[in-house]
Image 1 (spheres, rainbow, N blue to C red):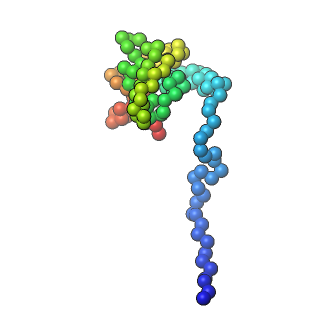
Image 2: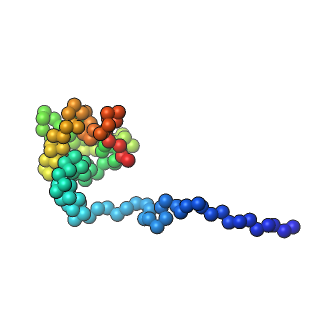
Image 3: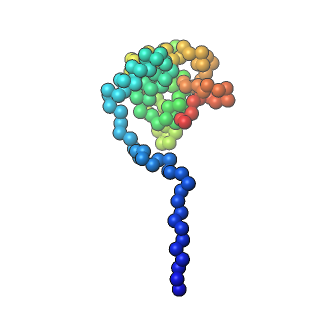
Length: 135
């Protein structure tokens, strides 16, 4: 019995990750971290600078970072030197030190008009969102 040759099935468009580096990325080098900080400072983007600095200091996952509340980093009107956040994946508390530069950038970021009356450290830009998303 003869089997007919069927036509090859081809995708209509190329895969979204064709030619891209997939998988775990290499960590940032200190010179790259400082370059990002300088660019954010020059652009006077205080909110993003504070977010970047807290992310570097805390080494938290993105989902835990965006859900941080003001009370996690602030007490009696001042930014704490050490903070503790409960991780959502492991349910374990993570303690980290907030460096002097990070404290200054968080303080400047708190002066933004979006922060008025917000319980989250990174409030969403839309009213229905309590905090920014990881996307």
